[in-house]
Length: 269
Image 1 (cartoon, rainbow, N blue to C red):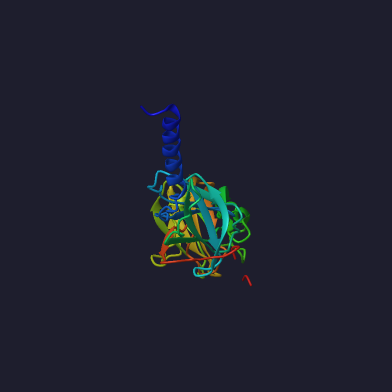
Image 2 (tube, helix red, strand yellow):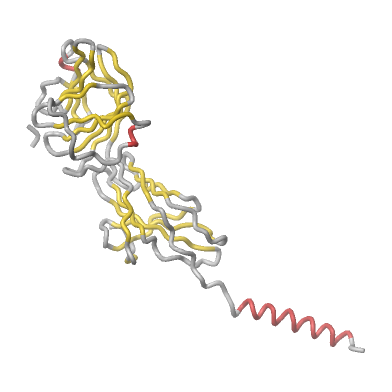
C-alpha cells in the first residue's frame, strides 16, 4: 500500500504539471480585425460604428485616426461599445478612421481593412425665414454665416416665397437647388447629388422633404422643411465648409490590406 506521503507527492506533481502546461501555453492569438465600419457626421464631431467581433474573449476596441488615407494612424480612444464619438473632430477637416479589437489577454488585432472617412460640418435647427413678398428683409438665408437676411443681399443663398397658394424656395442664377424627396431626418441625405438641379432656380416646398443646394461659391448644403405657412418656412440645415465637397454625412468604407500605426493623428459676391 502506498504511503500518505507518496500520494501527496503524486497529487502535487499532477497539479504542478497542469500549472506548468498553462504557463507555457499562453493566449497569444489576437482577435480578427473589426468589420463593417461606417460613420455619422455631426457638428464638430464624427461617430464611428462597427460590427461585433465573433471571438468570445474580446474585451474592447481601439479607435485610430489619421489626417490622410495612407498616413499614420494614431490612437484616439478605447471603448467596449460598438461605436465611438470623436469629439475632437473639427468642422471642415476630413478624418480617416480605423478600429482594432483586443482580448482579455491583451492581444490586439490588426487594424480594420475597412477605413472610413468623414468631414464634420456645421448644422442648425428650427431656422425660420419669412415670405420675401411681405417681409423682404427676413426672407433670405446665408449658410456660410448661419444668418437670416434680405432676400436680395449679395450673400444670400436661398430665399422663401409664398405665391398663388404654393410654397417655394428660390435661388439666384449663380446657385443651384433640387428636391431630393421625403426623408425621416436631416441625416438621411449623406451626399449631395451632382445632377438634377432645378432649371427654373426654384423648388416647391413640402413638409418633410429635404432640399440640397450648391452655393455660388461652390459649397454644398442641405435643408429639411419642418413647417410651412404663407408667412414663412422653418427648416433644419447642414453646410459643408470644404469647397466642392458634396459629403454632408459620409459613410464610405475604403478597403486596405494594411495600415501604418503612428503616434498621433495627423470673396463673397
